[in-house]
Length: 335
Image: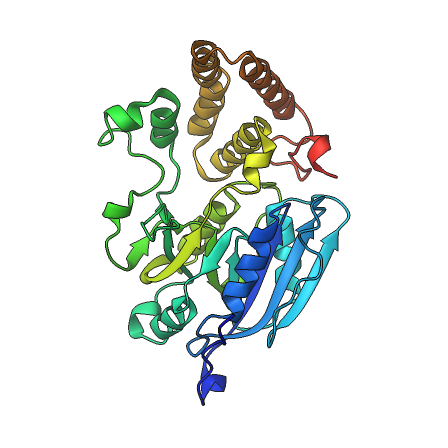
């Protein structure tokens, strides 16, 4: 392991606390922590790392180390959801900056320095949230930024029109070639989400009604409405393995997305748009998903999709519906 670059005067760099929410990410979590330790911290001084474990069953939170950096490990007895766990971690932090990192990410050695250098420029003043360029194992750009969701975006995704007519039905995520340089975006993805602490406190953190998905989108929209939008910092690179935790959910991942996007729609769209999305989620989308599963000959997917949409229909009429405070996750994911 190489030593982190810590030249004289590093104490003058702004302090950042890093929060990582973990759920069964195996060796990825250790690789993420190792990348923090080995990073050039001359631009951002890492004061503390907090790992919040959501009742993992794979021993991934055991015996973690971050030489030279204070480490706190919080172990939840049940899976409280991503937004709530992020807020748990942030409550233990007191630096002026908060960096929320996914455990399936690894910082490039210069990522923190680049972010810190950018924060000290006049270009950073208008923004409250900053993100990096996500790359794959070969260093090729991955999804780093997205548009705020709209009814048109979701219709395009449900029907495939976002691929056939992207001008009329723009995709949710910005393609890498659409963001060739640093600049303002609707939102940066939550895998690397750097926030000014004052903004985080002013917005009271992430909305914990989002169990998984769209919590950072909701936060970014509220931040923009408060006058502190998001900025993509293209030169800061972060490897992102993608969906290491969520891929373990199987079909229930779609259930959580259905709940989160419906909650988002009722929170930020007109009632007519929100109800239109709900109607499409219960008609066009399940038919399309079931048809695709039948074509592929995957009977298990057919049954799983029926179960997911039936559960979603029950959620719409139950205590977890939009506006309620209860969790939206299936009971078997809570332990």
